Image (cartoon, rainbow, N blue to C red; front, side, top):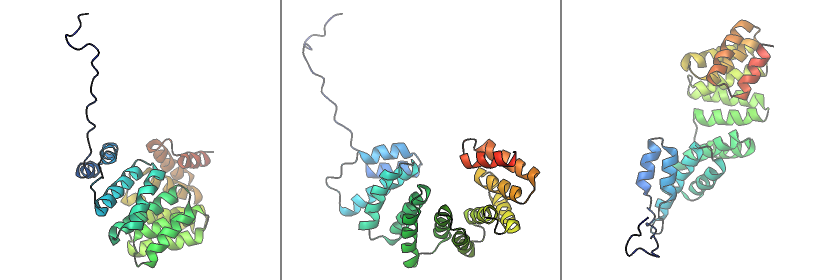
Amino acid sequence: MAEIPGNRGAKKKDSPKRQGSLNEGIRLYRLKRWDLALEELLSVDTARFSSDQNLELAYYLGLCYTKMARYDDALLYLEQVVTNGDNLLRTYQCRMTLAYIYAITKRSKMAEFELNRLAGSGFESAQLYTTLAYAAWVQNHNKQAIAYYEKALDLDANNTTALNGLGFVLVDSETDLRRGLRCCQKAVDLKPQSPAYQDSLGWAYYKNGDFLEARTWLRRALEAAPYQQEIIDHFRTATG
């Protein structure tokens, strides 16, 4: 192979690394391109950033990591916003996200801490109470979970998360089988394609002794979400 004249021993220069843009990262996040948004935000040069810009960056990094289920990384950035930010609505959103992460990673006491701080600050919402209810249910505090779900429904009577959660706890704990079935049915009526709601309705029918309906709904849930262990367990129980 012929040698290129004048290139002997020459070293290829590394091209300068492209710096990311905060605005572009935010744009990609809003387009739900979580991976690209994260890559863009992580390459932002913050040398001349103001404190507000650094908090904006931390906020979107925390959200991106949450969307990608990288929860430990998300906590690091969301805590920065909660600790140093002065935007009340953003602090509320970050505390809710922190509580969500703590709840689904089974750190229920920490979830309750974040949510109780919000409630003590006068922030009330159906989402707050449904997350508190979930944290209580994880700890087997069924009465407390029911009370929180009912508070959520007082604020939003058609909140499907609260309807489904309340219905499931009522039937799973055998507190009120008929009411639990009605709540689960309403949740499915409002959001019929949700495998989680189909599973709860199937389980409610099973607990009420209607095994044919139970198998029908649990089979639908399993077909939509074949790897969800709770749905698998319910289907196996209902089909013997």
